[in-house]
Amino acid sequence: MENLLDRLHRDHANLNRLLRLLEAEGERIHAGGNEDLALMADIIEYMESYPDVSHHPLEDALIEHYLTHHAPDAEVAARFRNTMAEHTALRTATHALRESIESLLNDVLMPRDALLRQLNDYIALQRRHLQREERELFPRLRTAFGEADWQAVAARHPAGADPLFSERLDNQFRGLLERILASEDGPR
Ligand SMILES: [Fe+2]
Image (cartoon, rainbow, N blue to C red; front, side):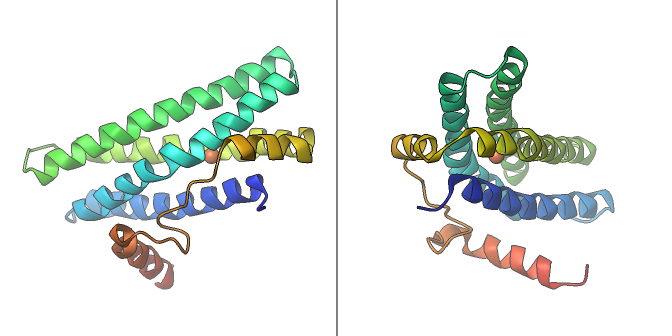
């Protein structure tokens, strides 16, 4: 069985690839270029198809197991409950961004500044969250958990396939994958 932390860390690296693409999109809008709504819609679709329904629930399950079986002090427990609350906030933010993009796709006018602000806030929220998990949550679990802990969580939380960054590529994300690879190929 693949180590769950390795998988979560790989997910984070992939999420950062998407955030870089979103950031480049923001820079283009900022420079007066036309926004690529289809690209942003694809990224949001992926966020709602994997991170929000598989990656975050797996982290929640690990945190709940940790809180239940490893009795951390109150401060650490509060921090990790906060991480779970951030998952809810991220889902809400993803949904709000989807609504903005869908409005624009339906020709509802939205000031570019507002879109840009929302996009930048979204990227910042995601990045802060990823960094906090890498810095606080993952090292803590790596130290505290033994094989039985990993097995217990994995048994209760069957892994959902990543529809973009795995061999189980979903056709709807083929174009997005090509865009990611093309953006990483080009000059930095
Ligand atoms: Fe995460």
